[in-house]
Image: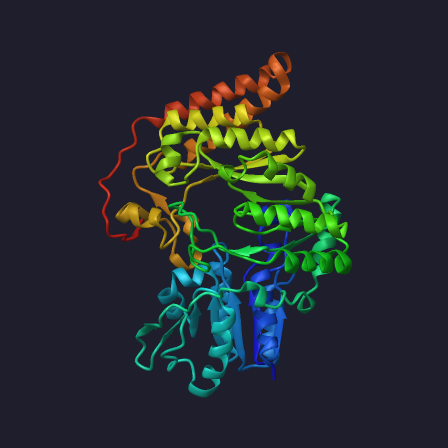
Length: 473
C-alpha cells in the first residue's frame, strides 16, 4: 500500500479566469515533497488535480480506502480542499494539509475534518510525521515539529516550528515523473505558441512588505548553487523541449553575484532559454544586472510596482521608490526585455490623489503589460493585524477566501473598477497618440469622473489592534 497519496485543490476546469488565461504550471512544492519522501524510502503517489475533476479524485480515494492523503492548500483553493477533506474522510483516509492557507488557519481546517496541518517547509516534517501517524495515530503527535493536530480531547495542539532547510541543494529535484508535465508544456504551446516549464533557484524572500504572506518559507532567502540550477535547467530542456521557462522565485535578482555567475555558466554550456520571472525595482538599478538578464534570455520581467504614490509605498514598507520603478522599467526595455507590472489599489490610507499617481506612473513607465488587484488582508500578515476589527467577512468562511474580506472605511469596490478603467484608457490613449487616442482619452475622463463621484472622504474607523474578523450584517 502507498504510504501517502499527495494532491492539491486546484481544478483548472472550475476556474473561468484561469481557463481564459490558460497558463498552468506543475505544483512544484508537492513534487519536492514527493521526491524527498521517496529518497527516504517511502512510497508516494501524486494525483495531479489541475486537469482532473473532483469526482475522479474521489474515485481514486474510494479505490483504496484508509490511507494517508496529503493536500497542498493555497489562497484560492479553500472550498475545494474542504470538499476533498470531507470526501476523503468518507473513505477512512487520514488527511494531512500543508501550504500557506492551512498554515494560516490550522484550527479552522482541523475543526472541519483535517487530521493534521503542516506549517513551514514540508519535506522533513512529512518524513517524521508518516511513521508517527502509523505508530501513534493522528491525536498523539506531540513533539512533531511543524505540525498542528487535535489531541484525544479535541484540543488543538500546535507543536513548535521546524527549522528550515539551510542547504536546499541537498534536496532532490521535484519528482516530475510523478505527473504528466508534458501536458502542461503542450497546453502552453497550444494556447500561447510557446511551451513552458517552471523551476526555482531559491526559497524565500527576506523583504517585509506588510501585505505579503511568509507562511511557508519565512523571511529567509536560501539560494541554490549555480551548477545545481544549471543542471536542472539542462535536464528540463532535454526532457521536455520547452520554448521558455518560468523562474518561480519570489525575487530572482536578489543576489547579483549569483546572477552574474549563473549567466556565465549558462553561456559556458551554450544554454540559453527564453524566460520570465519576478524582480524588485531596487535590485535592477545596475546596468550589469540588466545585461546579465538579457544574456540569460529574459524576455519579460515582472516588477512589483504596486503604487505610484511614495507615501503608499512607504506605508506598505516596500523599501523601493517610485523613481526606482521608473528606472528599472525603462532600463529593462532598453535591453530588449519586456516589462510587466503588478499594481495594487486600496491599500490602507490610499486617496484619489494616490490613485492618480499610480495612473501617472504607468503612463510614464509604459510597461508592456500590467495586472491590478485590490489589496486584501491575508491572515497573519502585518497588514491583517493592523486592520483589527475593520476586517469584515462577506461570506461564510468555508466558501470564501481572504480575497473576500472587505475593509471597513475603504472606498467601495466599484470605485476600483473605475480606477482600472481610468488606468487602462489613459495608457491606451498615450499609446495611440493625440489623434487616434481621442476616444480612449474621453473614456478615461469618464472613468475618472465616475471615480470622483464615488469617492468622497472615506469614513475611517479607529484601528483596533486586536484582529477580530466580523461578519457583514
